[in-house]
Image 1 (cartoon, helix red, strand yellow):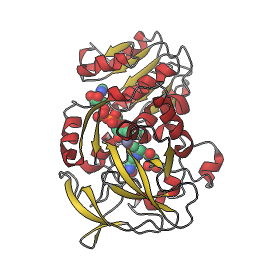
Image 2 (tube, helix red, strand yellow):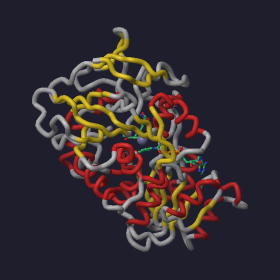
Image 3 (cartoon, helix red, strand yellow):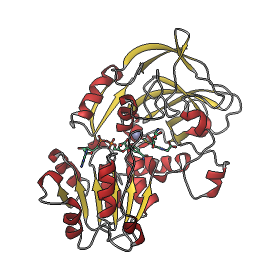
Image 4 (tube, helix red, strand yellow):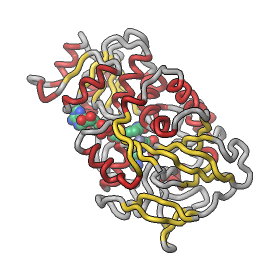
Length: 369
Ligand code: NAD
Ligand code: AHE
Ligand code: ZN
């Protein structure tokens, strides 16, 4: 079938809206009509060319919501008409990783997904007979996309697509990192580096967990008021701090953060995030994605003396199990999504959405079809 998609033909170039061809779902796959998709910094990261897994041409987008319109042979957990959120972290419930119950990183289709292909090693997308890569297994910058059944979360039908699409990445990543990965406890002191689409969800996750002090760190002073609305108690702009940021934060938290979160993708900030943690127990969680060739460093003494460095992908969430619950939290008013969606515009304006992100003018832009 012909579908409308924003294609990234090469790194660093604006996306182009084109009509592309999509093959029907194969065994174990479903065809989804995408109704709305968020634009995450990771889409921009891959488009920039800094992603070692970045492949072109591709259809970006991994924060979508839509409706199942066709199911392939053998699909049992989904039917036509189901409202769904595509998952870049699937949940097969059968692989070693899923069965371990120690991680959300299902590996059932990770190899082909990383090569921009469906599990059978081919792509469903093409243009004029030339193959186009899938992206993160989701490719939500298209009005129709195909996914394996194990990479689709079924959600309630009264949830608005143009809001809950954000649960497909940013909301779950931020809130989940606090609850699933760090397991922040009531009364904890938390420092959040980067108050964008992820960091603000860490802030609201920390409030949900009952954190006491919630410190937000960002170079953009315009982030302050929204972060306060989401639970931030103290704002720190590193440009206004005299001297080193780390001792400043250790002082502010009276000994160091119980938990810190890096939501930028900057390896120097990752080091600061670890080193501002409390001696003996402070835990720093890396969420930000850093470019090819970049490495983190610190004195091993930081770890010897009890600080813990962790990472979190998709907020440690098991998508098919946890995403429907997070949709419920939103529908029940436990988490705020609406105030983080700063722009909603048609897919044709996708390049404007990236510009707004780079200019620091948006938290999340949602594209509709
Ligand atoms: P964003 O662009 O919305 O937000 C980034 C924020 O960081 C901005 O507010 C910016 O002003 C701030 N910032 C930039 N440099 C800074 C610095 N040196 N010090 C302090 N603040 C600084 O991006 P986002 O969508 O929130 O994504 C954040 C990061 O998380 C990206 O690297 C993205 O790829 C990654 N990410 C990871 C996961 C995961 O599962 N691990 C999921 C989604 C996004
Ligand atoms: N392709 C990059 C890695 C990018 C990355 O870490 N992605 C996160 C999700 S970011 C969503 O906005 C993730 O889930 N990682 C786990 C995984 O298996 O990719 C690279 O460096 O190669
Ligand atoms: Zn994302």
